[in-house]
Length: 411
Image (cartoon, rainbow, N blue to C red; front, top):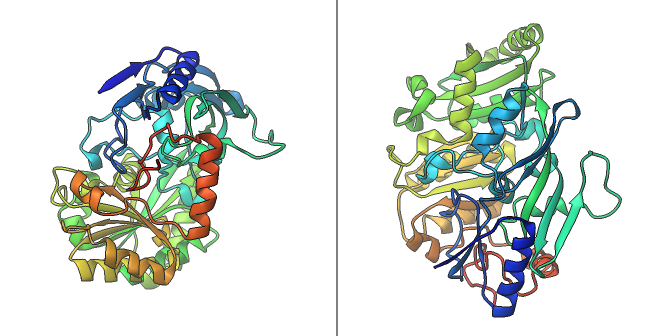
């Protein structure tokens, strides 16, 4: 396989234009931490952007950072943490789930995948924190979208389209992101022994309360028993987790009031500080389903559905397939590890999803399974046509990551 190592944005332009002339699609790679996600791409040429790894500008007082797309998250996160700041959407680290070397994720991969963590319910997703981008389109032309302040959009906010596009629209070279101050403290209330439906009701009640809950997750007992990391310490019974963050006095008051409001669901245990943060990292990174664990060889689905329907949906799915589930976003995000099968149980999963509205992505599976099933949720005809028009407006010859999103590569 041909690997093209670039030094700057001009090299990216030249590489894409050469690929267009040769009719040779390109796989866009930073450090390759998310290469196991999606379909096999119709290419034998790789565009390696890992050399674009500089922090161009960081202005803590303005809450913005500009960084090249190939920069490693493990380099950027300590920098903003040193100023007590964070990416509020909690970018997921897929290393444990996908069995790749930790610390390989890049800023560009974070945006292209668009995988936000538990605070998504409060802070929004990746695209909500993306202020601007420099990129090279499938025409081989550099373009800029957005800018360095929040209120700078006078037309279409094109940079938002790149979040979650999996590299099929453009090659990002530099991005500007919003950062936020870290909370002074956090506390997690833990309700024990609830079944999935009761836990869903408790999470809904907590999120509908005035106590500004920033995380709401539930891990059934059967999943916890085989878990790894900090969550394994809760294995005595099912655990429903509710996080509160902010000034210490406020968090203490809100935690006490919320525990009282949820007394009908049981007596809440309290977890604080570093242990609380570790629990939510495990939820964010789906540690109970990590490769090498009890469910490490099972396909893993990422399911987004109406939050109020999540508990019943996940419970029925686990019962029908013999799988295990984890709930996040108050029930709106379900991680499902299902026993291996020819299609990773795609048929019953998507049949059930059709009845409630939602979508499912096969985030982890072997290559054979990914060839047998649509990894990304099939779109309705009208939406698919609109998506294709958008893609063609960026990359008419399908040069960039051809075939990653669909089983049948676009010719």
